[in-house]
Length: 359
Image (cartoon, rainbow, N blue to C red; front, top):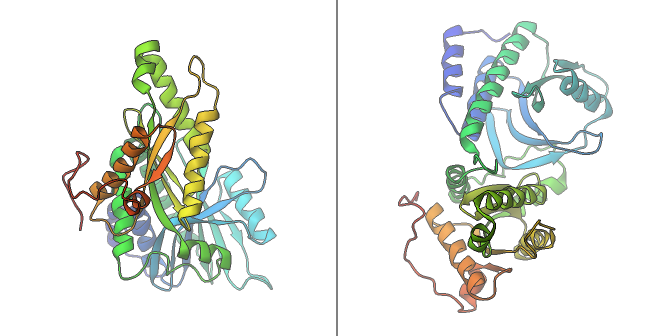
């Protein structure tokens, strides 16, 4: 095993738990693991909800050849070899470490560590690929992963809206900032995709961009005035559930405040983004609600590219949303398309969202 420095390990542990940003925590965790075993490769996968028996994982972060990267858009991975997939299933089901030894098709040893959440569910898996087995090191990694899982459970509470359990507004602004930083970085966030990922996954990741849709429930005040705020809260919870059920695994749903929600999605082009937001709008409109008939939402959409900060992104989406509201509701509109069509003005004025710009 690589020469172990207990002081450095404790310092690294403190570093892992000194952040509230999930991506930074993952980087710190991987850096600590690489410090322990510089020749190993590490990958962190999220376990995706799946109704089928076959497990589906999404690559969140990896460390290899002195490169540590967290992927802004997680990459689904289904094409594990049968022996490997069986070991992952066993690790997740038994909450125990599993080892896949070298074979004709595999020139490395793979050690699978499950990450367990507060509900005793396996929410992630860490896979170490190495040449030799060191059980002392396994114990350290297993302990560190427990700290990682417990800490994520703690900070997760601060990331969620109490009523709807969607991600909250503070988390939204952090996510927009992260995307903008990556977009403006000289090294694109997708250039370091592991070489063994499928060509289709690489193509999707490299060619996709983020879009932000600001959704507002139409005539929500009338619902509160007619049926009371408790029923209004039930509507908010139900709409939040519909949003969660109708976005993909690498998209994000937020409660922005009041009756407003935000969906950030990854899409290859304008047309596919439009279809995604329209699908969500129609799902909400077609759903059967007690007492309320034909509930609808209006949506304003902005592409997240080179804006100065979250303020500008949200302001663009807000202008498109107001256009949708003023022109009949129950529709979605894109800010850039409205500007090109001279239907709204490209004003430099700021909104109330935040006073801070990031670039």
